[in-house]
Image (cartoon, rainbow, N blue to C red; front, side):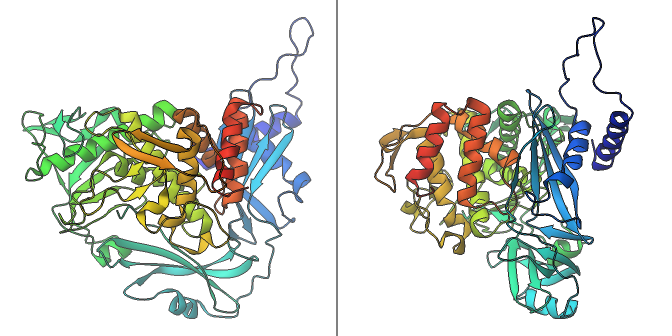
Length: 531
């Protein structure tokens, strides 16, 4: 259901309530059991609860809220995610989740805003000045700057949001949004929206795998009708030009793979269909994982598959999710081979799940949580695949790397030389791929516990930051706790301390306040220094 339909339905529900159409009785005169609220009813009562909860929401009468998503639990509890607007301006970092019981009582609110964002809305610098400060290097401005209220870092302030695009040093497309203080011209938050991992077909990494394809004239192509028509294409070693990235014109057309007998690839890189088999299998496995484990029907929960492109560029050592599709490079044969392993596929497509739900800002502590979310679910997808050719482990990219054992390590993130095992006050100031180590370490400890062990044929050994001993619980349970926190409690600016609270709330929701699962979540966070 789209937003306009949701809001229209909500108005109808609110009108019915005003006319006294609720509180029906049975034929015997006893009150009927309250039904589980519909999504429309959840929207109506969340919006109705706003005026009485302005203090909790850090809001004034100037704040309005636009519904983004609705979750209705089996017990009738509802969770309505809303973006905040003041004076017609979006408040970045002002998003909230309203939690209500079945009877409509407000159970709590998730937000990161800690004060009113109702600031002055008259800029002192021009939009052109903001562009000059935001667009650097070989990037080019995209569209016109827009006034917003920036509340993701420090005190809320009026700002220009400037979009720019181009190409990163390694050939990866770039799409950056930067906020510039509209009073002083200071650069506030810069966020890269291209999320990377630097990191029956005969595949390169997963052996012979089943592939759902579509019959066409001349044979079959890699379109998965069982999973929303997700398709895998050949980028033909072309890259997206700056005109494609900024204006979406002149984009290279990726070719469809065609196979006469529906047996794809040879397991060797000399056959272009081998990497395609990995990518197609990875997309299907990720789709199935989120649907069967978390009840999410596709990356965007709309039942649709997403495109994947393989053979992007020449010697391109990366893979990326650009908000709409997956793209994989072939590697350079020295640092890495083709980046189409199952955990990389799960990692990148999980960025789409994050952007469609909490939309964690890709900088600061929330950026580390964003990257860790993809490592967590990429690892979960690898275990879910249960593939003997690439057994589950807590190494990220171990199949693709040639100059080192893996790209990242969840048991002891610092083994890569850059990532952090433990939280400290400056963790939000480093690269998000390295600050993610704290949450990766948390997830590993919550599942596997501390101490040495062999998993998937690889040695793992996870020390704790506080000298404690942690005993883990079921992997799927911890992943469900993380997914529940991501979709129900995280907001754009969630910090590590807030992630601890959110996952404890999620564990309570799923398994109970006195459950071993909740106790383990608490112990694992303490073990990585998040208290």
